[in-house]
Image 1 (cartoon, rainbow, N blue to C red):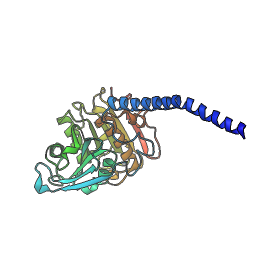
Image 2 (cartoon, helix red, strand yellow):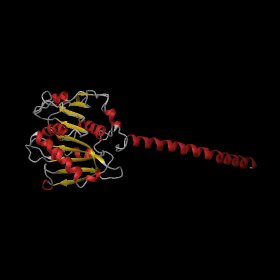
Image 3 (cartoon, rainbow, N blue to C red):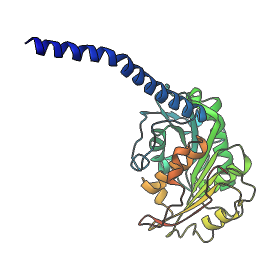
Image 4 (cartoon, rainbow, N blue to C red):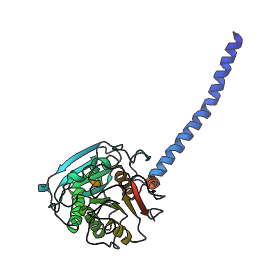
Amino acid sequence: MTRHLGAAMAAACLTLLLAPGAQAAGSASAAASDSASAAAAADNPYERGPAPTPSSVEALRGPYAVGETAVSSLAVSGFGGGTIYYPTSTSDGTFGAVVISPGFTAYQSSVAWLGPRLASQGFVVFTIDTLTTVDQPDSRGRQLLAALDYLTQRSAVRGRVDAGRLGVMGHSMGGGGTLEAAKSRPSLRAAVPLTAWNTDKTWPEITTPTLVIGADGDTIAPVATHSEPFYESLPGSLDKAYLELNGATHFTPNSSNTTIAKYSLSWLKRFVDDDTRYDQFLCPLPRPSLTIDEYRGTCPLGS
């Protein structure tokens, strides 16, 4: 019995002797982890959300809960109103923003699926209606910019938006308008035209990182006369990419599409948020697959 008690006391003494060192080591490890996190935040204060994974960039919803607010056409000028989708949390500070235009004869409902999908990943997203459904690309470009100005200066969620980190997207003539907007406002951080249509085929003036998305089965804006020349005419020094969807049509961007969402999100994260964690989905260049007919691009990114 005495032997067992002595052994127990020795073990207790050993624990007491080791504990300070163990605690110090644990504290040092925690401090190193905190320091690494602080360093990462200092390197890029615009990162929003957890580190991405292949499944997270394809998910229907990201980590943020999303609110939405309708904007009446009667309350704005220069565009036709729309719907703003935004992360409800304010604990991470402000967010980058993107405005999305529909195409010829279409309404915001045709691109509405992108609103909550992108907002839940950490963006303020504004899907807009145009002044008339037959507005041409140059008009849609001006309307995208008017909507960005409203979003950052007068909207109910302007306090959630970082006005220095903005992007534009659009479908069909709205995609043509996306190119027009990027040409007119070089300060934009990203542009994503979706099966875009425009009579202007060359865009050497654009300095905004641009992801052109076309569709192999598009008969309204065939890639040979629209998306491909748009992409090829962009400056060679620009961060740019061309994604041609496989088995897709002109109207594929009008409904939920994992490939469009994955690469649009990665592009916006990389260039609106400067988030290099998303480089992995853009470089090396994605290879042809069941959903990708072709992918071209400039790597490395951020040159």
